[in-house]
Image (cartoon, rainbow over all chains, first blue to last red; front, side, top):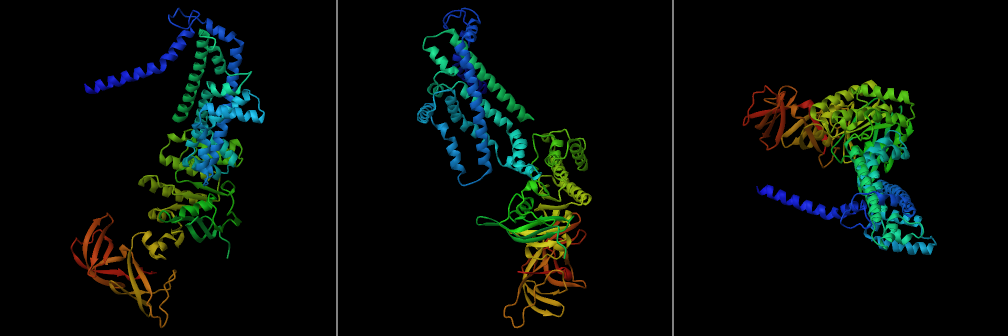
Length: 261
Length: 366
């Protein structure tokens, strides 16, 4: 009986924690379907009008595509660079490895605000204008350490032995990389890419500091928030959230299928 | 003298201060099945890595079929390796694994597939081509690794303790299959192991290594019966080692003074160099060790051609089916290991005279 009591208690704690974490999201999603002008209780009925409004809002749609472009390109670059850094570091054992590792991981300890400010000042000095390109570069900076860490963890001794076998059978270093290493690392690469996209997708501080005319979705949402609450914002937020969840599911599906095969 | 198929000349490998291979010379003939035998840290795996091109020696050369391959990359040398942990490609099918080397050698598709399937058949895995690696047992993976390596028709096949992960019965079976395959293919095999029984059962030639040096090399029976060094005598099977001093030479016999008394060893024109007799007028008698295999000791009075030893008391004995393995303490305090026929009437505590087969005693430099 005591065991069942403790099980019950932990279930309650879990439920309370889940409510604490997910209630805001549930409220956000629920009131995006509000059939009224303000996203506050009472819930007046189900409607998709705010979603229509979002899709008709050219500013929002443009920002959405900007976000897609920045997220996918910056994540692609971060994943490729992170993988190559990890591969190079894992295959060339030198006395400097640990130092390079720390250097590559360092941005993870710096807040986005500091990174954004630093980039802003650097770009200003270098004459690079505030733009989506600048935002993209900022997102590569924050995502590279993650991509590096994810790939580096997978490039162990076992992987080395398999690459050695490929080389022994006549494969050139490039063939080994493309036919052995990359396919074997595919789950890690997909995970690194998906994680980078989700982080870039709803990143605000750097995007806000480094963009001017063309902006990403979080920046538009922020500027809309300044003129008050509207169910339209809930609808955009729900879309952003849905994309993140979808990406996570895709990444999970990819990695679990690889793991089982 | 004709050039050997594979030659290592003064090959040495050092990692900073640590010497892995301390300068070895080795000549291997075409079609030979050579086993590098030694404990871990003896440098045998480093030698194999140097042959495969994964490690470059600090000094010396490797000549394969008349070509200096010392600094040739693994991809460009006509060698293939069966790795200790198999190192199969987990994201490819069994057939994909076996065909990989052929694809890298630009063998076109229908032929590539046919040859890969023929290789699978050869190692007893016909019909397994479409399986995934993780669906195979350890023994099957071992066979895939073997098929993958021989598919590229290497001039030299390198095997890095390939049977180490298999259970005893399967290991024995794979040993026989390896020998059969090697005879069929006629390819030169260099096989690394620390298992002396494995070495004896598969090798044409055993190369015993220790501390990065070759201690002895030759046919397994020769290395076993006439080891060239103290290490070879103890690592290749069990042996009783008796330290002693060369007392004098008496015609065709060498009189050695040991803890068991004076033992007269017949000196024959042996294939292995015997210690030279003490030079005339030398003050220090030469220190030697006598190596006597347990099966070359017997219980009872010495028959003709044998050397009588001081009596000993049987301390313990183990029945091992074909023979009895027993330990006896000599009256002089020396513990001896014996292997006698299983039907020998003996029991612990019994005091018995001992004898040694004179022809089988090996004199080794200390």
